Image 1 (cartoon, protein in one colour):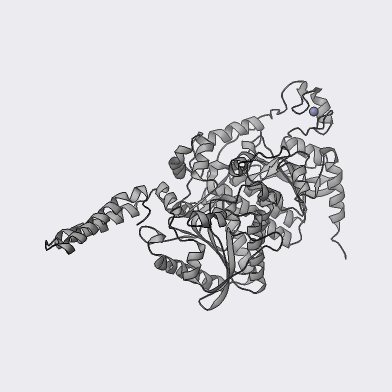
Image 2 (image 1 turned 90 degrees about the vertical axis):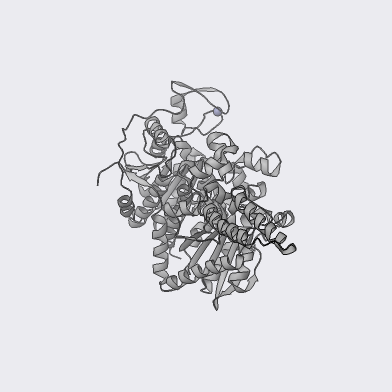
Length: 321
Length: 285
Ligand SMILES: [Zn+2]
């Protein structure tokens, strides 16, 4: 285990100790198998306890885990024959968003997702997964293409946010995101969106309007980062942990707020612990969602999507009705 | 849908409608924040709420905008009764709302309804930056979505005057989702041939800029209005570079092809009149 999060330290320490004992017994003739068995039972209990009681801040850290699988990681395990397509046809190719066509269970689909790097070099190439307008425009181009060829769209959301830069503003970051929100609402093919890491504000929204919105158990979706919220609300970015709780940004929170359709369970200890198993869980969810959505006519699809979003919000009336 | 929502969470609050307080400093005389000269308040009001000397566009209340753009006595308000809940149980949120309701005399950061512009009926939504900085929470999103729905039913154009700092933090992700809600509503309106005009006033930033404000069939802005996605300070910190003074002004956006026109307030009504007239009959090829 290369990267240990603070809350999982007890688990890792115990696991290391067991490994140490096993190592020791293999080199000597002392029999510790009973002790090891006891410790392993304890480890199982501890893992359940620690990973079963993750606090919002623990999930934020898990969502940002350096080894957490990215869009391209999942594409490899969920789809076949992925062919990446590039460029927005206006300005350039934004590598913070990847997209292309692939096969899912024998049928063609369009896949799009934010792409961050796992090391500095890749992060620079991917601009830390923070798109410019051309990223959103490339995504839209691919979605319109999916609409034309009647194949479903699957998007993976994983960004701290749209890039706050001078060039991004000059080229219309607002317009690019806004247009995606509107155009995605009008696609007559099923759209399934899955938050796999951080869902940062408008930059996340820009590719996440769909018929089904899912979040991995340890992903987040928020209007502002916990650090940003803390700085804004309490003038102290050190209160990020508190903000993570107050702002209700975890997958279970969003399910309760009725913003998402379901939470996709993660492998114990986080998606990075077993990407094959995690990809399978995601695949299963996509499969059953597509099965449902295929039954709908174009008109029903658009109508249900419209209803889905018109429902979101917490509003009261001052008039008794 | 709206009814369902109320059934889900039915709570009632009582709002006392207070007399509106003025935002241009009280009194007969007003100092222009731009040229620093002193003018009679009445003089500024008569000059379309712009400075007679330097044409600085003063902040306007929603009620003043309605008076200025719609024919007198034609405005009928919609959904005045909708108020925010506190979905995150955010500390002091309801108190802050109440304070702004008392200060502004309106229930939320937007007023919607219908009226006439030189005899041409239209649906309108006017944001009021005095209320929580015009931020968009559930009520703002809901009122816009409802106004779009009514405009569609009554076959009216829809004009929105934006003035907003973006999404409302205290409603968290529900605020963020109002970007989608309004955009989804506009998609349907647009697909059915509805005319939507976005008129951006100072400020129009963040989530409002990145949703309905940018989705007009025609996108206009008032001179010098601040319009943009990310905050200036955040951008400067990110790129470690000082930004030009005119960055994210209406003129800056116009120069970068983001706006159809920058329209000074005195020309607002006449421009809208012409535009509505040109859309009165569906084009006949
Ligand atoms: Zn002046």
